[in-house]
Length: 175
Image 1 (cartoon, rainbow, N blue to C red):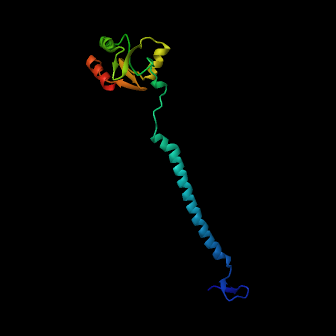
Image 2 (image 1 turned 135 degrees about the horizontal axis):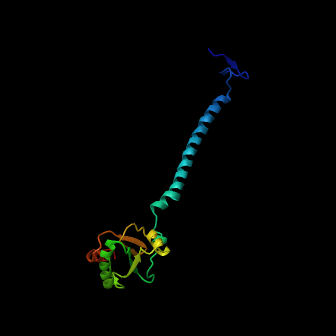
Image 3 (image 1 turned 45 degrees about the vertical axis):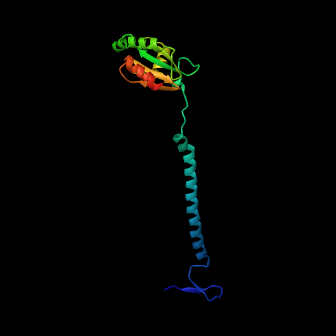
């Protein structure tokens, strides 16, 4: 059983230890907690939107930016496509591919295919120079012979057994 006291001679009685401000504190605390929760949710929503537009959205809409890996070593004038032939003197596959390369080179050297002037570049990887090492690292040459086409800042790898027919088809398809 609770004991009640009379405050200021008024007729309403409260349990001992409680004042009239207790209810207001409880109601105010509930009110403040609600705004605190809503404010926190809004803060995290705004933070999430900011992080999305600042970090995620640029990655989804990334545009191509050429770097040193996509620089052609040949003609920088108009539209040109450079066909790179990485070979080694000691490689038997390169010795087989070299005459095919020379035939293709004599047929297409400085000719235009679909608006691209074809430039042929041979890189002898048997020569241990800084320029050869740089190009091998730049174009990820891991075996011989390796043929790559540089077109519009892109490196396109030829991935077939070298023959005049497949190389001609490669040039006509890619260009």
